Amino acid sequence: TSINTFTDASGKDVTLTGRTFIWSATLNAWLERPIEGYGLGGVLTNEPVTPTSAAIWRDIGFVVPHAHNGVIDIGLQLGLVGVVLYLLLFSSTLLDGFRTIREHSALSAWIVSVLLVQLYMSISEPVFLANGWLPVLVMFRVLLLRRDGLDFDAGTELGDRVRGASVRGR
Image (cartoon, rainbow, N blue to C red; front, side, top):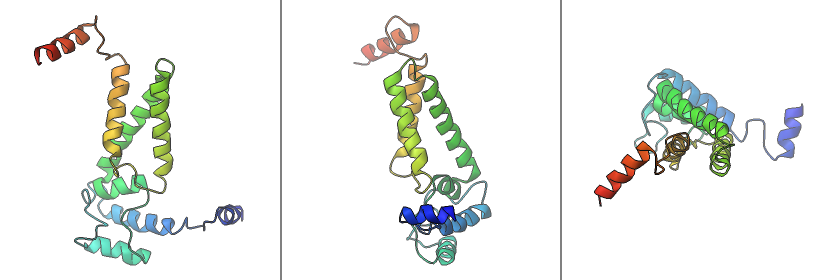
């Protein structure tokens, strides 16, 4: 089939080096606690090994440190509540980046580029909660909000109040 040709040419197999097994096992575990998940670091940790971790590893046949998928990883840890909140934050930031690209091309283009790379990487890695990406996403959101009418420039009432507060605080 064409998928076999593609995976053979890329040096991969149709399971994406075992990721489809990982996704299946972690998705099944998430579905056991779909709303609230297991908590941050509540599953797939080496210490302590939980019954859920052991079951996932048994189903897969080897130990994995995470779900190898951004959305499944959030769902496993924070449930549907976390997935919805994260996707709202991510999508609103990405859409505002696209929307403001004409007025603030350099900043917006950079933010959109980073978010699109993050989205691509999340297919096979848990980038959303790993390695400090959540604070980066929040920072991007704040930068776009600031660029979108909340600029603290002198001559605006908000800008004058912010500058006055910082001068008084010195």
